[in-house]
Image 1 (cartoon, rainbow, N blue to C red):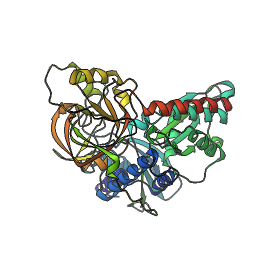
Image 2 (tube, helix red, strand yellow):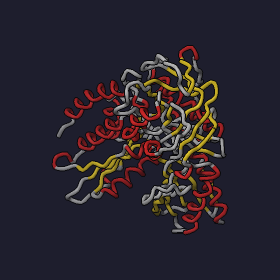
Image 3 (cartoon, helix red, strand yellow):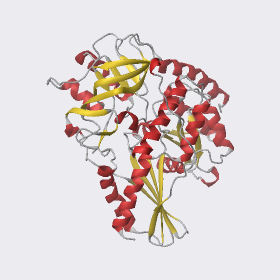
Length: 478
């Protein structure tokens, strides 16, 4: 196959994978929404999630601003290994970063320099078929950060031990991995093998035929009641995929259980090469997105920067307009250390934007706020911050500031209401730079999940789920 043609097909694969959720995942999310009471917080979260997925598909925008680390799983067919495929993937990744666009997610470890591109993981396998199959998985940093590896010992080395490991992973993740999630699980004698096989399980389709152990784990973890984005609800995990234990092997001394947590934005795509021709496996769209309506009477209007005392409490809905400032880990550190007077808003958005022109934003959803715990209260005092927008809550937020849940994974929907006004420290790279962003009417939908008095919806959900977790762990003890 011509390498240029293959490269263009892979660029298109990137575009479709970033903007179109697989049908099986959409159907599972629609079903999860139906299990919640209309008008409830969980029902509304699912409504916003599904509307964002719909808008991403219509506009071709990435559904989430974190387009993740691209992972390619290649099965070379009877014709054997072809170096052109590897080269095409590498070239396509650079071009797709500009064209799709993909967020610049390659940061050099030694000096934290953003390289302005993405670097794909490439996994190679072989099979006795006449086709070469290229699977693409886009997995964001939030879901990767809550994934875990467990070392089981003694009498823990059985299915009950695997179940307990899954319970621990999901309980500790709460909503930080953009629940409802999907679990890929594998057992092996080395951590590397377990992690690789666990992540590979995420290529499976949601709600396919499950084993008894997969069903058992799914049912048990959903009893935790963590729900979408950690705000409470009936579905915390959409599905569980376990590497066949009859085909798994370990060293006699080792029993590693790797759990790869995938957010609900389970972005998978497949390219098939046969007889020198490549085609993208089209996703069947056998579902209809639910109609999305916003009852504006239920929403509080908030204008940023905030210059008055909004009487907001946990559970309130908000539509926010005006100018906000994005800042993540590196930006927070800089804001504390610099003596320069920066013109920033008193509403900080924990977001690594995905921009596609000087002022245009392709996707702009929230990042995990807990990463900013080290800096946030000092920032609040230094810059008189009135509100934080993020996902998953914060451990020790200064009283007086409001925390808004910005709907994790929802990137396309707010982006169309945003434009960049000004940027600082652009040398940090697109995600880590500081951006002043204008949000136009009708405003981006947010939920008050931590109020100025210190009340936290996350704490309530976690405390409730902890009681259930302790009970379940005892029931499944060795």
